[in-house]
Length: 564
Image (cartoon, rainbow, N blue to C red; front, side):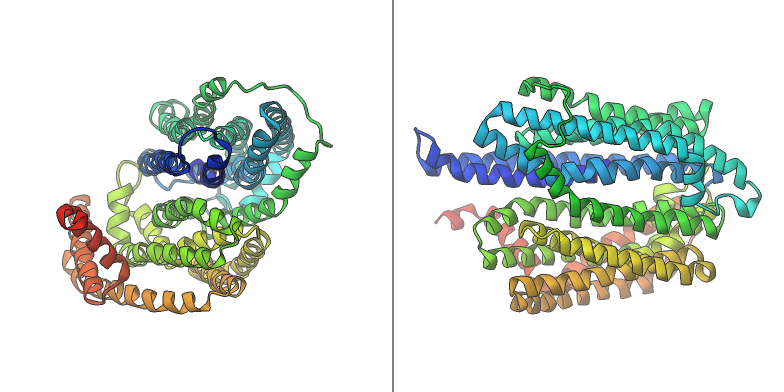
């Protein structure tokens, strides 16, 4: 989850860097403006490549981390206790430090650095860093004391169906207290990420999430044999320490002058706090959505429901991260530039183009993963302690979570469209509305349908959130024509994906063989054949994204014609 935390920071920093690159030709003395502008754009491309590589590496390590945890613990009651315990410290970080980093600190720091010099910027950084650390420490101390009450509040049904409620709740309390060290480390590390990104230094902050994942993997592999699930919690703390330590050399190179100060009346700090407000509410709502589904109601379903639903969520989130988050993050600097220039027409066109690109990947990914849910779960997770029963509960939830992949991926670009316009309230209000819908539906469906009902609730809430977000964005930007063009393109993409899904539905029953080896064959054969069919139908339907890719490929293969 740390990788996602850095996305907003990277986006904001890149947007600031882009605007900085455009203003420098007027300020510099020597060289042509065109040359310096080209250099700035080249620098942004390099920075974007570094961030993209770090993001991809972190996601791949995240898959490995998930598989290793499944191998060591399966979807066991003990792992249920771990996931419950993980929610409390993660909530503290996401809502407090994550909000500061993602939307508030970077633009204020960058403006101070440019207009008032490094001393004013470092003074702000020191002030915010100290306040965030102290606030995080206070919340962690409160959570430490209240853990025996917080854990039952988050997961009231933990272990009750197997008569181990008190035992597993006590274990979750112990794990919570161990992992409460991680928000302290990550709050400092998150601020350092923001500082480095604001200074256009991306390598170490892109590397940091990988150290976090490696720490958890170390806990699962090296410590769980001796300490059980507590070894996994220790790994979280080790990973958080790695996330922090790897970035400190970057601060040294930037010659940051830190001073312990916590001036709550400092005007730039108050501006950061003002910008934080809506984002704090939005992140709190998003975290509440996750906790309600995967922890509160899942604990009522029964043993292994928390772990099974969490594993399913992690798998379903892969397409959202790789397509929705990655492409939206890459597009955000351009959106910010167009919004700064009051170029609403170009802004709407960029959002439209990125949306179509996201859905070109997300729609077939969602349908393919839904049809391949059981063999995919087997391939990714079924080994060691993770048995066939765990695969059954995880794949059952995964099938319905796949229904929410498309809206969750699309929400990423439309939210950033609003952020570029300086409107954080609209996305936050819709996120809060989605939480309410999810809670109502989960209350109705959990007892009858179990984890499938919880997955359905989350997917329906996601669809409603995106539909209203899309509509309000079109109204705000006056881009109804783009919305109509989007619907035409989406219908062609959906038709091609439906053909692929029909093929998978007809063919997969013939591959219905038990065992991991058969699952590997099923996943790869079906994925390759389904992808080929999808692309073929896209070509027949003249889907724009395929046409553009083909034209670019032909241009690369025939450079003489292009140059001539």
